[in-house]
Every structure is written in structure tokens, then in C-alpha cells.
Length: 366
Image 1 (cartoon, rainbow, N blue to C red):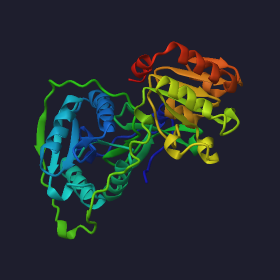
Image 2: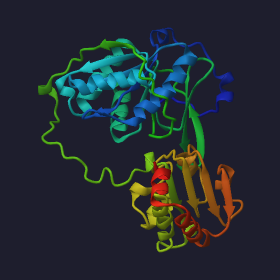
Image 3: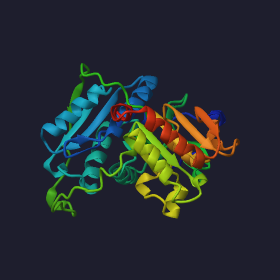
């Protein structure tokens, strides 16, 4: 949807041209603060950390954008935006925005952008964020780079948004050269969480959106919470054990589960395991699954293709177990063990079971 170019940053030297005069009206970096029923999605704070770096390099302000019904929850979201790095917050309060619906949220955010003209607008690549970002970018007739793994600012001030492409086999950097604002979505846990500073404050810019409930087609009849929403917590787990095709069978995947249970950890796997039906899609780790940033990640029998690397390279410690010494995962793992995971996993489980008390396992997981 963008007039984007996927050329590497260093190859853009010959492409640079004077930016259009009207681009000077677009300033500052915005982060959409995603919240539902008083709960702010953590990806919003992660984006504020990334946005802070972009804003500092551009010499502009970082703003959080909060949409919702008037009330304490909305105001609390504004305060948290300040605590996580925002200089100011655009606040759009309306009872029409009490629950997320694409039409009123798209109208409100589009009107806000038209009025205050941000240079960069970032949203989380969540179910809500993807839905909203696509419709807003389409309405604004601007470019949108989805599922980014890295954000930077080029020498001419253009947003350099890096994402996997060609089925995840390559990483490309995309520039939206001729349109503003420059929009991008980033998946949860892709960016580090900034340190919270409860002493930080900022200014609030209220905005009255032109919304009419009678003109909104969709209606909220009843809220039914997802009973499965807490089934897995891979994105925010501190210890994760995962398996790949090197385990050879669904029965052998139980070895991953056993080690995870012993460590008080979560378990997951690579995409081929989901395709084979060994695990559910909610346990998939990688580009098309969950992005994770655990303190410890143990990958057993996973080759480590770029699709998987994108989802795990933010881990503090990656331990890779594979029979192939040339497996790509050894290129980015912190510790590599060349052996058969089917033999090593039971030994690891027994060793940890003998050394870790239940209290120690709980402490490791926390």
C-alpha cells in the first residue's frame, strides 16, 4: 500500500531528493496507546521506548495517542504514557469510543492526524492495532509497513522500517518517501521495554472528534471475555523451552514439556510443528507466531531459519541443541550444544529436577 522502496539504507544515497515543501508541516513521533477496558497493552510502552529514540534523533517531541470513553482508565493510560517516555499526550474522549470498533476509532485517529500532522505514527501489530492501522493508512492515503523488527531514522529524516519479506527468508528496509505520516506496526516483544519513571509528567492536548453513534454501523451488544486468552503466555514468559522437527515425532515433544514443567517454564515450538499438528498455533514461536524476549530460551532440534530468528533474538540467553553443527541457529545462539536433543533433554530434566527445589523453580520462572 506504500510507494516504499526496499533498498538497503546505504544504497539510498543516489535516491535522495529534496522533500516536498508541505512535509515541513508534519512533525513529531506518535505512538498509539492501545487500551481495552482500562488495560494498556504492553506493546504500547515498548513502542514508546522505540519512539523515544526516533524522536530524540529527529529533535522532536514524542506523543502518546489515547482514545477512549471519559473516565479514570483513559486518564490512567495518559499518565502511563508519560511514565514511559512521552512528552505529551493527545487525548480523544468520547462515549462512542468506549469499546473498540474500527469505524469510530479510524475516524477519530484520522481526524487527529489531519489536525496535528505527525511525521511518524507507530502502532502495535496486535489484532486491534493491525485492524486500525490498515484502515487509517488507507483513509490517509499513506504508506504502512507492517510487522517491523527494527525502526531507525535515515539521514534525511525518513523512517527506515525493517521487516522480514519473501516468506521470511530476507530482511528488507522500507521507506515511505512521498507521503506523510510514515506509519508502521511492530509486534509485541520485538522492542525492549523502557524503564518506567513515575516522576515524569507531560502536557495533555485534548481533541474533540466528530463522532455520531447513530452513524456507526457496528454496535457492541455484549462483552464476552476470551476464556482461552490466558492459556499461554509465551510473549511475556521469562523461561521458554521449544522444540523443532529435530525431535522427530510428536511423542518426543513430550521431552520439551517435561523440561519446561521442571523449570516452571512455558513451552513452544517452530512453525513446522504447528503444521504437523504436534502443538497448537498459540504455541508457535517465530515471525508468524509469537515474538519472545525471555531471560532463558532453550531451543531443541530447531534449525533456526530467519523466520524463527526474528521471533527469538531478543532473548537474554539462547541455548541451542542440534545435531547439525552448521545449523543457522548456532549463528545467533549464546550457547550451542551439538548433540541429539532426544538424548540430552531427559538428562537436563533429571539434572534440574535434582538440583531445583519447587521454590527455586518458582524463582527462576519469576
